[in-house]
Figure: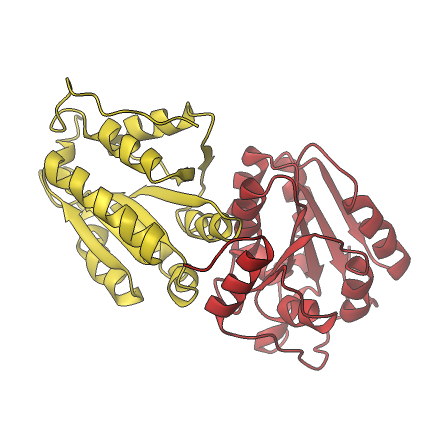
Length: 180
Length: 196
């Protein structure tokens, strides 16, 4: 099994996706599913080229919630990557994680909250945290690279060790402005 | 196909699972969950009472985690229609140990027997074929279900989806536990995993 070591030469501020990959590998994540987001592209590449992790591209984000529950039934840990617009697609399926107390870790890149060009991203952005909390998830946020890395490490422990359902929101300010 | 199905769903599921060996089964909400329970509770069963559209995808995550075990997602037409995009995801993932069996009464049986899409020309097996499934089929008699049970015990190099056309009726309910934490922990213990 891969055990990536931290690279002392790269600071978290410019390389947080590889830091998240290192943390998730250290947490023994074996399945990753995603609907793509530009902010997740490096993490998607890292997992997709890892022979020890099964990667699923999804047609809608709720599929990843179900896959994560199935993975846990079979003894594996799973992480789900999506952008904030995808959170709305997940809500009813999150009943499964909540009522079954399945470990769940979602990493959500935020759109519609910082230097956003596309107004259609704004309503679901506004609804992301309240709707996740309404269905019973714990919501954490990372606004800086250092903060995000520490937050995901903590969230992984909560999810996989304490059977919690956790979403980590990755601030749009951290991801940077989309170029048009 | 407009011919009226005559097959009894409970009889079909009993034949399908009569020699299940160590197959792991995930059932979709509503009648498939009652059908699965009616043929005998089992530690290798995970019964859904909600999460509509999730049965086959829970099956996918499980199949990927347990590649040496056969996994069966036993669901209904309405449940699989809600998770129809998942057939594309499963086709791409191409698990070698996942079968989806749709107990198709062409109706939403739990909510008053409203007609579903599958009685109006929508063919789940054709959709699965277009998603790259390794095998598909539709069966209508107990003899065919018996042959299907034999077929799904054989190895294959990708996912399979089969439809069993059944009579639209609600047999007496056979209710498994609705405590998902209990069912989850029992299932995991069956595979040798400790509760947290």
